[in-house]
Image 1 (cartoon, rainbow, N blue to C red):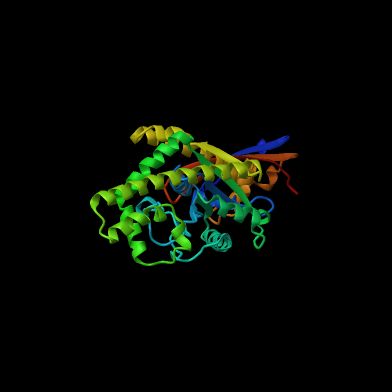
Image 2 (cartoon, rainbow, N blue to C red):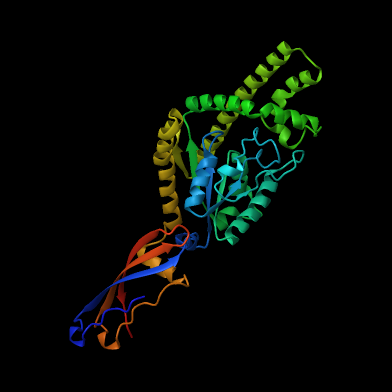
Amino acid sequence: MAMAPTIPMRMKPKKSLQIHCHLTFATTFDKITQLATKDDNKKTKVVFVLGTTAVGKSKLSIDLATHFQGEIINSDKIQVYKGLDILTNKIPEDERRGVPHHLLGFVEPDREFTTQDFCNHVHTAMNQVMENGNNPIIVGGSNRYMEALVDEDSMFDFKANYDPCFLWVDVALPILLDCTSRRVDEMVEAGLVDEVRDIFARGIDRTWGIWKAIGIPELEAYIQAERKMADEKTKKMLLDTAIYEIKKNTNKLINSQLMKIKRLRNEKGWKLHHIDATRVYEKSGKIAKDVWDKEVLRPSLEILANFFRKKMRKHELWRLALNIKTMPMAPTIPTRMRPKKNLQIHCHLTVVNTKDGLNRPISFHLKAIQFE
């Protein structure tokens, strides 16, 4: 850091001295975000992304994780099971953009995974995320799991230890139901029937675990007809019926999920930040992406920026910066220049993000610094 300019003795201030300094140091900008993830009562900040099936929760959570140094914790009660990636719509590895995912595809298909199991595992995952210096983002459509964690988990007392921010991604119901119908067709084309056929062949106990997933019971009659060498006409009729039932039951699930979300808001008092993604699903291609960035991602980023920094004032950034070891020394002020009343310092701090090479200026103002 360059030395501050020398000020002649004859320029001693009568009342106060103002110094403008420019500081630059290299670190990750995410370090400041991490330092701000606990508020005054030491609660850990946790982001929740909730919504019904097929509204874009996974995409948004990854977008947010890349901006706020996050790791994703899955709360979908079907996606916790191993296998059936098409049926459960797990996000492919190549679409995760390097963001770590927890509680995804780790439970055996024939094992029951209870809400208490979820709470136990999610606390372990959150501790791991925090140990990594990152922020936990819990995402999924199983609102029952989220409710159990936030309101009913007496063992860990979530409300006493965590500060949640809830993002509710929503799409107008008529448009969403049309999208889910197309998505079921795409899943069939991608190999859904082959996945289900394989799990029937494994002879798993049908009273537990993943057998509750929409798509498995609906296809059972068709799979049995295949085994019995039924004629093509019969098999086609059974497959068409199964696809119709999958779509119908998915629509029922969406309505049920929507009712639960509204109950959490209206009866449980959850403060849900409503993100309307409807127009994204009315568009396609680059236009849809632009709408997503403007109407879904941007407001979500603004909400989280406020959430992570909501108790921070500009002068508090100075105290945060002092916690970073690479902070340079402040300019030396000669003893003879002590002001009679106070010293005012205007600082412009530039953080050089070592991750992406971008500079992010931060300005703050320190007033009334008293000298002995």
